Image 1: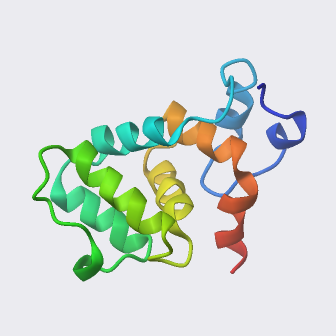
Image 2 (image 1 turned 90 degrees about the horizontal axis):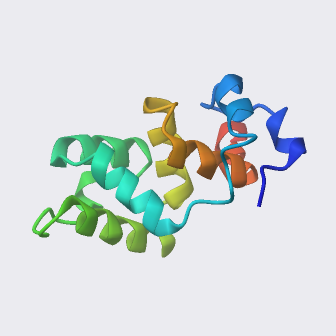
Length: 126
């Protein structure tokens, strides 16, 4: 699936317009959850980096999963499960949005924003 034309001209909070336009020919569709988890595991692979991102997303440290997992990817799968079950108001989409503000040129995070703009925009109007 190509990026819908209506999204390329639309501003998405935290996503530079040049990045949106650059995805016209690169984005074949929405990244899978596994793509997103791997990206977060690669980019936020330390306990401190992950904890700070999750805290900014509304998940208090006392509610965050333990780092007693074998990999950062396993940790991020636990986070995904928690957030998909409503642990925070904005959930997984908010984590992706905040990660994108820190890594605006990351292709997986950018593609996630392009293919799910209504969910990522909701936070900016609250």
